[in-house]
Each structure stands twice: as structure tokens, then as C-alpha cells.
Length: 304
Ligand code: FUB
Image 1 (cartoon, rainbow, N blue to C red):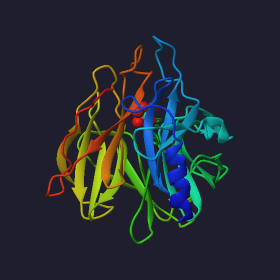
Image 2 (cartoon, rainbow, N blue to C red):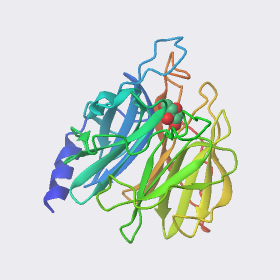
Image 3 (cartoon, rainbow, N blue to C red):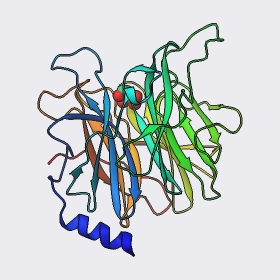
Image 4 (cartoon, rainbow, N blue to C red):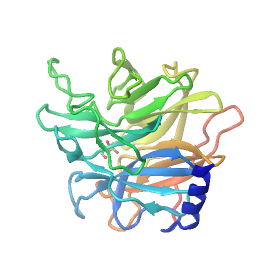
């Protein structure tokens, strides 16, 4: 009850504007979303590349929240790549979940001493941070024992807690990987498994809606978002097809899907702000609809 009243008060005093792109004063990418105590929290990476830049410049994550998906409150930066002392650069894609009274933030960074991308986990008592490194080392790093080094395959973590309380982390580039998490949320419980998926590139994301499990991900490059359905967290997954077409001036798209106040939403990014593009992206959101048989219906991008 206390939470509801607090949320209502916050809602009444909310700020910022509606419509897409959600954030217009900076470039934002790789949305992650969390519904908590009557608000939806949106986590983004900040795209800091200059106009005409040739690569990502991403140093921090930012968090926004809303009670109505229209008015967004800017909560600033809850952590940077340097929150992980072992990281060298790159605040890439992330995901977040609440377990008990703690918030666990899984994030892609570049490892300072092990070549390639790595996944860290940070923890906070609040969805708006500040977050601290929960493990003091990476949860996932490049496997240096392999003859062929793939430096990009440990990116884009997505966390999912099943109804029985078991948590899973999904991630990967080219091959989707996943593993059980221990109840402490900062260690794996068992082996890392892989799944062969049609032209999988990145942005694996598992959610459950009305009893059905959904795996969405970015397929091909430039990327389109596709959806699969399955009976559980391990699949088997069956392909429903494209739910969002590729962007025109950005090759990536990176989705996150949540239910909030009786509706479903898909967050993603495009390059629709003026001077936007490949390394200057913008996060947007659309309402998502399911067919009576549970299939996710294709959704078009909208602007203001
Ligand atoms: O933002 C850097 C990378 O681009 C992310 O990790 C991918 O999902 C793609 O959006």
C-alpha cells in the first residue's frame, strides 16, 4: 500500500515528454526494462560517438522511469563501465532483474586484461542505483583455452527468473548461450549451454506472457527482431517470424519486452534523432500485441 501511494505521488509529479524517441537530449541504445512498484524503469547505454564517428563510444548506462509510459523521469547514471574495476571500456548492452530487495544489473563491458567482451554483474538496493560490482570479477569472459578466439561472443546478457524461482542468464553473439544462476544471482549453477538459432546475431531475450515462453532476438545484419515460442526456458523454440523490421540507418535494433499496467511493450533503438545513425542511436517504445493463439504480432516503429 505504501509503495502504491508513493508511486502515485511520483506519478503526479513526473516530468519530461512522451512519444518516440523517448530520450532526445542524448543518444541512447540497448534498452533494458524493469517493472517495479508501479513504475517502469528503462536502462540504456549512452551513445557518445561524435557525428560521423566510426565506432561506439559508450562509457555509462543511464536510467529513466515512468508511471504511464508517457512522462519519463531522468535518474542520471547509476553506473559506468569503470564501476567494474576489471573492465577496460564499453558500457554495452545490459539487463536487470529484482530478486528480494536487491536489483541485479548484468552488463557487457570490454575486459581490461582478458581480450574480448565480458559480462559483469552489479547490485543495488534501488532500481536507480548506485550499483556496485557484485562479484569483483567478470561472471563471463572470453575462453582463452580455445584455439580460435571469438572476442564478441560474450555480449548482451538477458536475465529471466522462472515461476519456480530459478534464474537464467542468456547472452551471446552468433551463438546463443545460457546458464542457470545460483540463488545468489552472481554465480552460475551448472554448465553453459548453447542453442542453434536461425541466423542468430545477438540480443537474446526471454520473457513469459500468459503461460507461454518467448525467445526474441536479433536476426541477420542489419538486424530484424524475431520471436520464437516454447514450452519452457530451454525451448524447444519454434519460430513465429519477424516482429520488427530492420532499421534504415542503423544495423542494430536490440529489444526488451515487458508487461506494464495491463499492456505489453517492446523497447528497441533506431537512429531517428537528427544527426543520429549507427553509433548515435535512440531508444523508442511501442505497444506490443499478441494474437489469440499467443503469437506476437509484428509492430511498426512510430515517431512523435
Ligand atoms: O551497443 C553495442 C552493441 O550493439 C550491443 O551490445 C548490441 O546489442 C548492439 O546493439
